[in-house]
Image (cartoon, rainbow, N blue to C red; front, side, top):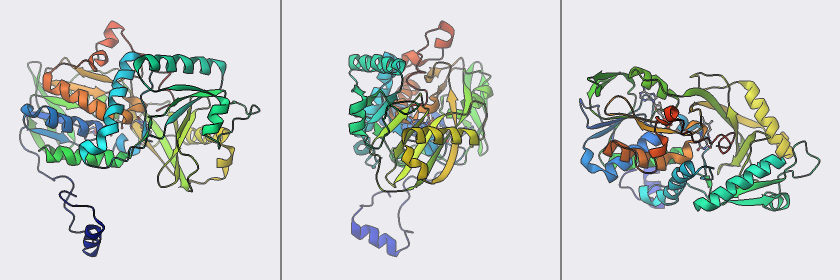
Length: 419
Ligand SMILES: Cc1cc2nc3c(=O)[nH]c(=O)nc-3n(C[C@H](O)[C@H](O)[C@H](O)COP(=O)(O)OP(=O)(O)OC[C@H]3O[C@@H](n4cnc5c(N)ncnc54)[C@H](O)[C@@H]3O)c2cc1C
């Protein structure tokens, strides 16, 4: 909707013309034979990378994003949109907090409403060990300057009256961690906002363009083969989430990644009953309520590896049981639809933001079940890496070398079911 204003009059005017007169949000352009930088993957992370690269490093030259499907149609379209930064270790807390700060100004920065709603996130504790872990993480967050609180069961009940906190439950709620600045955003708005802003800065966004091979010689990337023809370039950033190992294989590389299905589902729409985000690692489920009134529900990955964007029925059953354990009244709510995405999981549940053994070829992947929240931060630091050839201070700990040196950043506790 380039250059349009959003007055009621303009909405009516375009409505009378059957909405045929809106200008497209981003330009549809043909693939050129060469670029200075090519980003493979037009999800939130790829689009954010392109935007920050064009905005902060215009000297890099001509930039293209190649997307095999439609922009934002991968995990970006399929996730449950939880945004938070309360991770345990300093390295990951810093990168997610950097992202959260960008979220807080993103609507203004992109001039596009990404519908970021800071409604808070609760991580429930059901055992004494859960509560010890919660206290440890909240204390770490306090040292990192991240807003986080430990609540007891009474305080949780006051903030979430619908939650069954009775001691007679199979997994009674003993307390929770609470990050008030956390929340949710609108996945499509995020992809479209970044796409529009990148396009306005001159980035070529090419949909329906699948990278099928890489031209590498003398240890350097020279170009990409695609279903739309060859593209010459000496700098490539791969941001392909669940398909990152497929791209790595084209370059003769092996990434420490496993691709798993991850599912979510939504209920029928109903009046507002939940105004925050609630997760439970122990009971194994989480939910929020969308602006449309649907309960948005998810849990952990399907254990097998694969590229089918579906998932198995028993995981849905297990997740529904977990939600009913927490909210027995939701047993009467009908479920509307279910879907799956493919997430790229690393051994330490942390991302890989790295150059590779091939000069000019970079990867940003391994965000697993929790990368949506990182979209602006990930794009921001990866843009720096593509421009400078080296990781910036926030990305330095996330290079692929850590799997050789043993400097892993184990975030399984803060990841888990908690996206
Ligand atoms: C059900 C579910 C729930 C989730 N919930 C949350 C959550 O609540 N909070 C959170 O923070 N994270 C969540 N996540 C994780 C989050 O969705 C991802 O980490 C994040 O969206 C990754 O973004 P991306 O842009 O890297 O990936 P994607 O959006 O998947 O983009 C990658 C793109 O690369 C393209 N591509 C792949 N191969 C090629 C090729 N050869 N050529 C060209 N293009 C290619 C794909 O088509 C795709 O569009 C969830 C994921 C799922 C599946």
